[in-house]
Amino acid sequence: MVEQTEQTISPIGRFITFEGGEGAGKSTQIKLLAQRLEKAGLQTLVTREPGGSPGAEVIRHLLLSGIGHLIGGAQAEALLFAAARDDHVRTLIEPALARGVWVLCDRFYDSTRVYQGKLGDVSPALLNALQDVTIGTMQPDLTIILDVPVEIGLKRAAVRRGTAAPDRFEGETTDFHRKLRDAYRQIATAEPGRCVLIDADAEPKLVADRIWLAVQDRLLGWPQAKVKAGAKTAAKAGAKPGKAKAKAKTA
Ligand code: Z5A
Image (cartoon, rainbow, N blue to C red; front, top):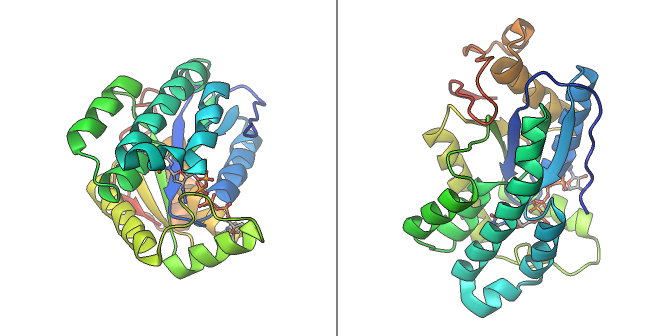
């Protein structure tokens, strides 16, 4: 079961998703951001996809074993990811946001769009239908896309894996991972209001600082973010949970 932390009191819940290719550093950075938010007096919950809720964690095991792919290719996987997401959103994410918690999620629907859509050729019509059923009009307030050169990400992932066998997704080719990176960069370009592309090819502390500036700038409305980052965009505080609209920014 994924680590979940809930600490202090938050006035407004926010939904932040982390995306990126293999070894981009999502798990590392999500924990660092949670620590900073808690220090700022905000209540956080760290979760992940696939998984996050007890039902979705069961489906995670199926997906990472490769069974979904074996029985029906990328389309069957898309259905399984959607089933897991439905449980995760209904039982964990929405209730937490309603309580004013800041929810930080390691991967969300952009992963389906990239892995099953762009790379797996599942039709946009099916993906849109699944999205309607699982999340409706709910959207992350902010999506942090961590960007690293493929070779570096794969090297990091190999070090972390050690002698364990690669899972269904880790076993893909370098070409697959290159296309993955391109697809994420395209999402960042197409949806600058929701997404921020972060250069994650740096020391973890430096990457964490870049993320923190983006969060301050877009969700907390702290002016020092603009000063330190030399950022051009204004923060958009006060939007409804799950509905924030901020301007484009790349860090
Ligand atoms: N998937 C999908 O197909 N469709 C969907 O809808 C969803 C998911 C939701 C889940 O894998 C798989 O499911 C995923 C996509 C697919 N497949 N892949 N690949 P997962 O949950 O098991 O793992 P992941 O999400 O892919 O995580 P990851 O890429 O393996 O790792 P990461 O979270 O991005 O990185 P990390 O664990 O923080 O760091 C990796 C290592 O690098 C670790 O040893 C760190 O200490 C090190 N690290 C981290 N940051 C740095 C920096 N800055 N410098 C140096 N070293 C670092």
